[in-house]
Image 1 (cartoon, one colour):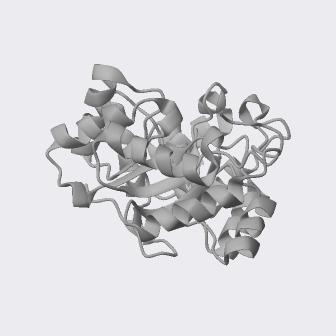
Image 2 (cartoon, one colour):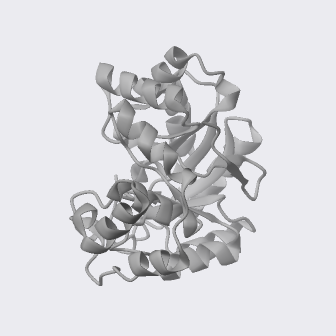
Length: 278
């Protein structure tokens, strides 16, 4: 199937659903990512710290799909926020994947206690001008971090990839992203390690549409205006996840799922204001 796209601030066409690759790696990882591309995914998300950029690059080559039809995304680790470190990390990232550019490259975490995320962002903008990155984004940034980037550089990231699922709906963050024109991407949209797939509200809505609970949640994410990045190694599951655009939830169903939000819903309590990623 052909996945619709949305245009980012810098003109990149981003598919409205993507494929997450953590923790896929090695031969099994190559086959899972290759399968996802063949099934129809055109946005593939990896990271330097996932240690699978090489697997993703190999899967792209084995898929037979032209490189220019894909949006390949990776992320800069927290330990490489200084200018020269960031430049070396991006080159190493490309060497691992055997690519000449990334379509989308994100700062993985703001690491505010370290206080170098503005320098990292400015460096990625330089690498965008050099042609190594087509679009510069961030991950796990809070509203104050986004405004710090804007104040310092006059630019905002194209996307902000954050934890987003029915138990952690990110109302304020999504609103802040939208106000700045930043597209929200959702990592762990199915609530990794939680029981959201067995929640009665989700199960009832899934039964009403004749689909699985996971498909309902992914459709809910897209109808919130965010881009989900589900991970699945099984080709049939990959197809079902990609097929969520074939049905529509009612406003009441979207509201019912959104109401599942919990004060303690964040996974592993990884608050970007406190958590340091290396």
